[in-house]
Figure 1 (cartoon, rainbow, N blue to C red):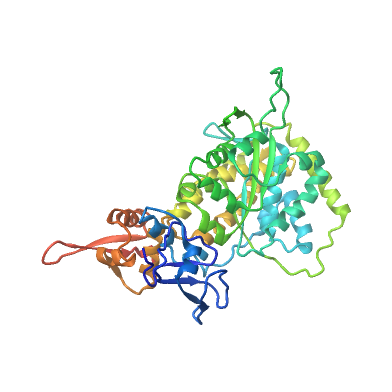
Figure 2 (cartoon, rainbow, N blue to C red):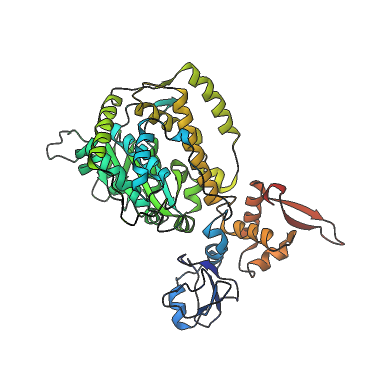
Length: 492
């Protein structure tokens, strides 16, 4: 099929997905900054920041992906560039309030901050995750018979590729290497490419005589290219998404390979992921958002905090001092099992729990923050153990709440009112930006140049209505009543 003029709009770096060009020409709009280069695609950026190129034979090589499914092309291309960059472009970057910097974690972040360009929120969440990985799955809180240990998974989302995401881990790693050098050397995995690799890392190695051997259940995975993980999760037959969800829950991990079946019980897996905002929105599958993978991560918006041309100069003795404190607290924490709240903390938790239960924004954001109370429990357990406490007190809840609010604001900054459905998000953007108060079914079909099926459009409309972002109204005519789609009041 030939590309209709003005239809194909995507941001630099986003794959065109299943669009197939027949080499007969057309027009491709590529939204980006003025002067941006697109390798191997001829054309010139205009002063509006839109590059118009001809889909001649040399350009079609860039966008060609074989497919026989005509309407999948519309799904891949329907989201306008403004939504792939940021759902809330005018929203402010979240602020980490002082109560989040509680106990040893706060001391460490404040000590590191003058000497790093990393975002303090990224440093804090990475440290909490690393400490939790050292501790293991022993200490935990209970909620509906489910154990919630110190298994915290931050997904550090940079506003650009220069957000210094990796630097946040580099600083924390120095401290953890002092606290437990064997763990850092042997139990830190620099990314993973499959579910099988993840299970193998926490599975006791087979022995010829069948005698079971002791195996380390703790594993810290630092994935600097989390976009690649999302890409693997989208592959047909991939077990990675399922195994990650099971790993966060703490259940049995099992994967069948051709030669054997690997089973891991009692694994304590902590994942720290790094990704840019653009990559996250481009790579995230609807199934991973609504299926529960992403809400097992704490979304951490990160940006470069400062410029340090000469680098930082945090001395080794200070790192060593923090490392010794972390080692002592981790050893003490391993002797703790069930962690309860104090009487005062129980009263405060009742208030927080009600606040969390009332927070239901719907759409993609609602799916991403759906495990808020579970995340709060894990954060509060971690803050308590970093205080050397065996009970969760009010200050630990307040620290956990401050961190959660930062992560919740990060998710809102990135996802806003996106639904996760490309067609629905394209329709919503049209309602907001076109100045039209309503769209008829004919308007909707024209919006996609009649390349989207009626059934697919109705699914998108249903998603918008059920999310509270749009409403349907009926307008009488001489014949069949006209059904119109309008923005809901809260979405204006």
